[in-house]
Length: 321
Image (cartoon, rainbow, N blue to C red; front, side, top):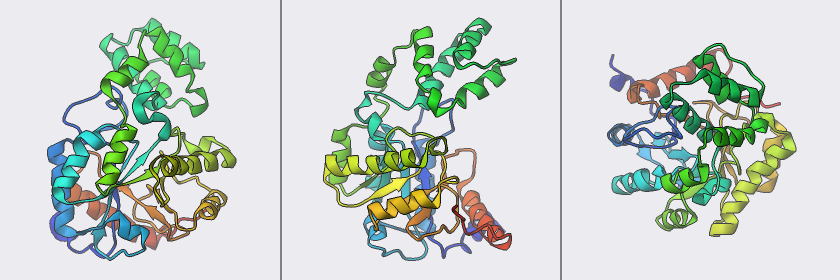
């Protein structure tokens, strides 16, 4: 049986696919982090979703009016492509979506340290990964490496608490990150957010600075989350609370989630653990459709198969401590 035929069997559950960007060319601040789809591939995804599911408006999600066999797209990190590429496509396709942003990066005054790392790796690649330069960078972070691949793995996975040292590497390589941010317009602007809001699209918080939350205290986690939601409310006069966890929601505690429910009992919180059921119906689990090397129909079928497998092994229900 084909993936298309299998997909017709898995329509009861609403699905929440997510992406970061859609783009037709490589870009330095992303190319060393993850793969992404081009416009043709994204349009193909939309056609598959529209053929097999009903489009869900975020307004109906907020009003708890969600029917079976529906889908809702969301996009993380507030990259400029959500305005320049994705927004026009969604309008043309008659779809609404949710965009999760990090307020610290709006208007391109600063950026995500992971994006800086990708830019650095691009320059190192262009200059041949010179060993003396790699050693100097390793010394900044107190690590050694015996190969280029080992260096890349350690550098990409530095701790959030060491992110300020990335600026030392930028200085070492004479990379003017402010010029890069302004020229590339890596992230969207307040003006663009307002335009999309006026057009019926929805925005949510994604923490202020996109930290791996597991590396922060519970108090710091809560502040990062609530402040990002409040920033949207204060700057755009929205009256709803939406939030998506950066990196992963797997280590998020019951205590932090309860703090968010105290902040707004109507909040909708998004994770990325696939088709699983969380401790509260206000927590919605998503899966990524971003990888261009994975066939979309097969991936949706696989996510559904994992769901049934997780039920068998009793891992369908997410337990929070």
